[in-house]
Length: 148
Image (cartoon, rainbow, N blue to C red; front, side):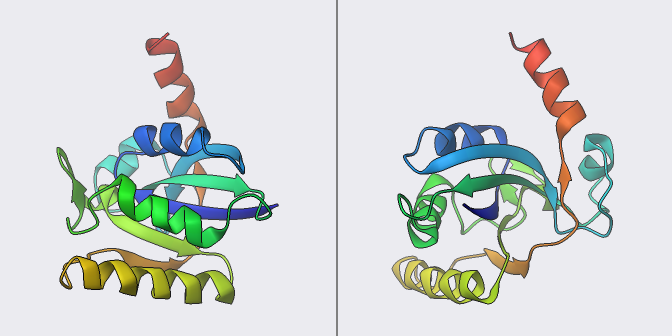
């Protein structure tokens, strides 16, 4: 099994979209890319932790490739929006691919380049090394309880 972490706006809709794809074994929401590996939802919302809302995927690469996941990633959100996914605004809602190894880094750059050509050079997606991941457990549990 492999893992990948993607930021494409508020994490709820992307998590739902990825959850139903063949080869996706597990989804998890959280925050990544910031200055610390321990943050709360409230801290992230202030916009000064450096974190993005992310969906972390565990996938079976025999069923779905990282490239296919990135293809879905670019089609699930508007990668031309900087620090937002309308109507959500803030750096935590940015578009970003967090790579876990050099292979993912190369593939992310290749796929981004393809989509950037299609979108006339307007892509705002960042590609960064995976760091400082914090699972959104507490907030996720509160959300689930509130929306049952």
